[in-house]
Length: 261
Image 1 (cartoon, one colour):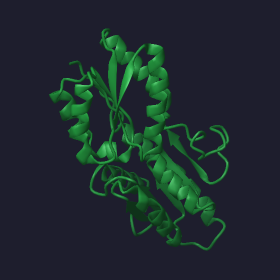
Image 2 (cartoon, rainbow, N blue to C red; image 1 turned 180 degrees about the vertical axis):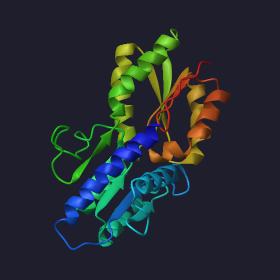
Image 3 (cartoon, rainbow, N blue to C red; image 1 turned 180 degrees about the horizontal axis):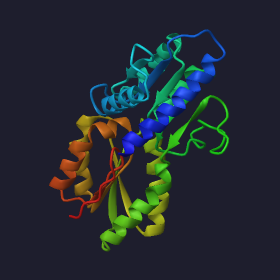
């Protein structure tokens, strides 16, 4: 339901953006570019299918009344600038980005094409995407979860659920700006709660199982997750490993989960 609501609202915003641009140039088939750090056949395909379906219900049919250009980096973040430049060369009317790394790549690629981010996990002002929440300015706007502001609350809820909790493993991706910000904010909040954090830092799916072994060996009593394309791609594996190691957890991604040991 949440995905459908966001898709509907975003579809309306994108159409309004495109029609504003079209009023200033000859009629043409509106072209929407999607830039994602994630996998083309993974979670991002769900968003793609949702957008296409909602646009269709609004009367806009792919390749007939609107065109879509999808570019996915498959968690290879160094490819994002190339993919963003490719969308600019294709002269899309607007670029949609689901995460912080995607948005930064698009912003660096163009100062004129409108950019709409759908899930920035951190404060877009702090990340330098917009001037302010009230007046974004420039060519970037969108939806922000600002997960970093909730980092302390998630740790607090874990502490309330497990009163004797003293150490929490935090799963984060140093390559992802939003994930890194949540990790840094978690460290500040942990001090106030009297918690110690174990850095479960991974930059590939292959490092996940070894990271869990280290977290358990360090005496971690729970797991807190952060956002990002890589972490979303291994969410099922993360949940299974947390269950196997009996770690109560909060995982930020497609869903936020809490599980008792």
